[in-house]
Length: 238
Image (cartoon, rainbow, N blue to C red):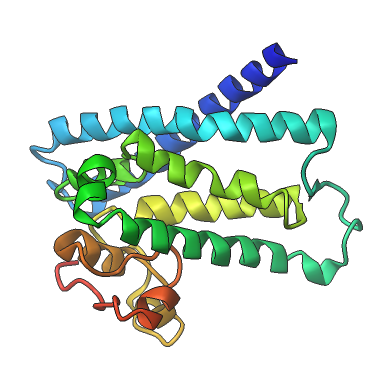
C-alpha cells in the first residue's frame, strides 16, 4: 500500500512539474513576444523561480498523490466520473464553489503571510521576484506552498465534483496563477475595465499587489478585497 501511495505522489509531482513548465513556459514565450526585453537581466531570478517552483511541485504533489490513490483504490473522495451521477445543473456549481472557497482561503492566508514575522518566514521568497514573471507562479517557500497544496485535496472530501470539472478548476488555477504574474495584461481592456472585470483579478490587479504589498490579496475574485477595504484598483504600469 505504501509503495502505491509513494508512486502516486511521485507521479502527481511529475505531472504538476510538467504542467508548470508547459504553462509558465508558454506564457513566458508570449511575454518575450509581447514585451521584448522584459526578461532581460532576469536570468538569475528566473532560475531561482524555477528552483522554488519545482520544490513547490513536490509539496503540491504529495497530498494530491495521496488523494488520487485514495480515490481510485478506496473511494475516499466525492469525485465522480459518470455524467448522470449528479443532476446536470450541478456540474457548473461545483467548480464555482471550489473557486469561491479557494479564493477565500487564499485571501486570508495570503493576508496573514503579510504580517512582518510570517512574511520573512513564508512569503518573502515569492516577493523576491522583482518584477514577477510567468515563472514565479509557483515560486513559494515550502511553508507557503503547503498552505496552497491542501485546499483542493481537502475540498474533494466535502463537495462532490465531476472529474472533468475538477480538471477545469485546476486549469483555471494554473492559468490565473501564471497570467497574474506576467507583467502585462493578456485579457482585453474591454473585459478588464468592464463591470464583470471589476470583480475579477487579472495581471493589472495583482501587479499592484507586487508594487505596494499591502493590498489586492485575492486570487480569482475581488470580493474579499472589496469587503475588507484592501482593494487598491489596477496597476498603472501595465
